[in-house]
Length: 451
Image 1 (tube, one colour):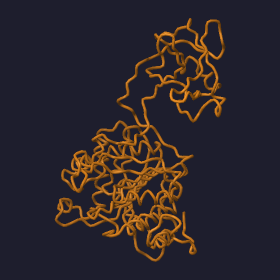
Image 2 (cartoon, one colour):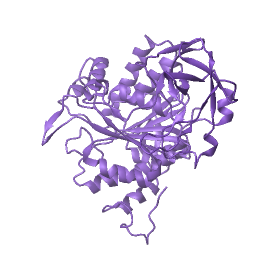
Image 3 (cartoon, helix red, strand yellow):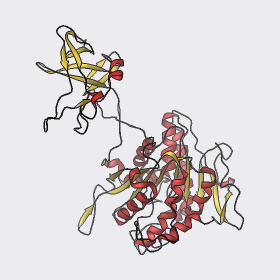
Image 4 (cartoon, helix red, strand yellow):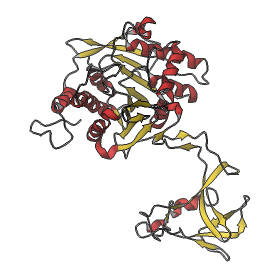
């Protein structure tokens, strides 16, 4: 954890008034303990899932005592500091510095909770995007920034000010980019042109089309293949290849770049290429008299895209999903399930744990249960949410929900019940509730750890 030295100035990195005090908050004792609430829990004895009620700063300190370096993925949707947030942690972050001081110690603690191959996703909009990015660059390291998503959150636009605003952002960082482990998404729209005895495939040239890699600096990747035009394969236009020259064979090196004439290199070395000859790499006739070495691309998966433009990512979709579960509009503009499902598919393995310490309506928990119900995984979640009181005139309050945690807990119950009726796999739909209790003596351990 980064800790400002007492002699260190606040001018040599991104700084704001109160930064040193904010960093100190992360080091202070929690001043609370976590009190189990079995009566508000579901399947207390068997579940791996936690729901923690209380301010997330002391909660993170207590969770650190048990879960340090054990959280594979963190997702947060913190207050955006727009001046009209539904709920905020300091009631009103009237200055950017107040918001920075709120988020900074929480991210310092969050980093300690991540596994070495862990990742964090942080939703935000324009108001604090620049500040959050600078803080994350400091806490996680600029070198560990994996990317930024632009989310089509409002397809019909909010026509305020000078621009009809349609998007939000999500920052994506790794604890250690060189160790981070992520996963591909299913590509349901992918179509294949060819098929062999192994299944459907497309083709992609085996050469690396980046001019930065060429035969001068990657000589081990610059070597010839030999295509045998008298040995066609079953599929029209495909031919056997080898590493040895034969009579009548055609010698094929990687082509040169059209722009600068730089000789490209192969993506595979000789040893790997030799193992997959005429199985996953073959010769292909591009046109009369022109041949290429190509790889059979069989995957029906893809990396998550930086532009998340589908309407399934819209905030109104999230509102409709909660309204369908509750039969009333008890929560406005929660994150849509599709967004959290894709983030969780990207960042979580089937047995990993996720933390969301601005849990809100518990979309993250819902997404985790849905993934487990779909593929038989045993992912688990830790939700943290402050029990923000709801307005007595609100639909949620009139429906019997006095605070935000009551909505979050009930959503998990209802989502689990709905999924059980449809799921091909059994899944953990329970959760153990803990509440922050103000007391002089802290727990020896932050929370009972059910593995």
